[in-house]
Image (cartoon, rainbow, N blue to C red):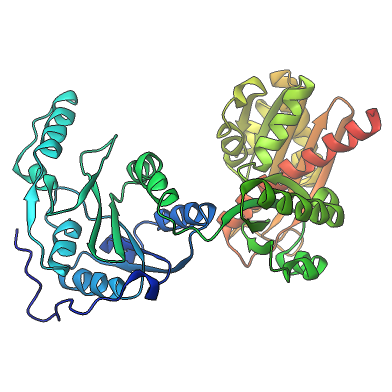
Length: 441
């Protein structure tokens, strides 16, 4: 392939040395990202990795599969950044232009690497395929570039310093391949590069039952801190606080994080339900597992969403026995044995029916605990007495059954109501388990 820059672009001439550049930039390549067909999860993951390595990271850019624009961006970034990380555009199809464009940006020819081509052929053979001409172009790299091996896919990346003080690293857009390559090669390279500005560590605290603005007011002075920094993030019913600290060694940084976490927990109590990758479902399952107890669910408006949250947790089968999606009244009546008179007198969306559903699935499965959800997710089906967003949760356990009424409103849509209903049910059970444990202690 040609590595000559487009006639419409100015060639890269005067380069500055690394001392005049700063930080790491991320460039994600793919028209599908610009169109919103897929979420840019790679940039988020890379950002967290860079922070953990203590690397200053100032910009993220997305560009479509356009050779001229890609060349222009690489040339622009080469004059201000120390390191450029590029994801996407390394595959065998015609729109995979990243390697060629980078070489063209510096007027360096491509050359085929025999070891890369051999690796591509071996991987294709192991999968019962034959590597064709379109795949072979993945073995082309700029003269002087080092291969960044791909242990799981066929498209290699590269680590290349085309001009003094500027290094570019390329990765496929496939997240699993990018992460494997990063951990195997890129992270060690960064650790040895001397670019780190200390060690950054982060911890995320998860909160339920409080809004982002209310939580921010409660911990306003902590949010104003410089090291550690604390940043709030809101999700579907959940609020997160990310604590990030910097020090000259990990132990000192983690000590700063620990101190801030203790202060945040002191102020917020049971509102904080988990840390980092923990979810409401994983926290509930862990508590039940430690107590040797089991769980089942009965769902109406969430349509299996609650069960999906629980079974997404590895090892859930040791606690989660099963569930019933009782969308129709007939299923509530015939399978969960909800009395017909309750359905007629109170309606399917009511506290008595939620209680009967929880008791019914607990009896049906023999579980220690049971959760039920019935509500109006909308956008239709509401009434003045029972508006969209009205949800009832039932929690049945060894100490009896209780219900909770939720008024979630109709402004955020059906999927938000369903997701928050599942979260509220799990949080109700979490708080009940905590209360029981405190009483027993």
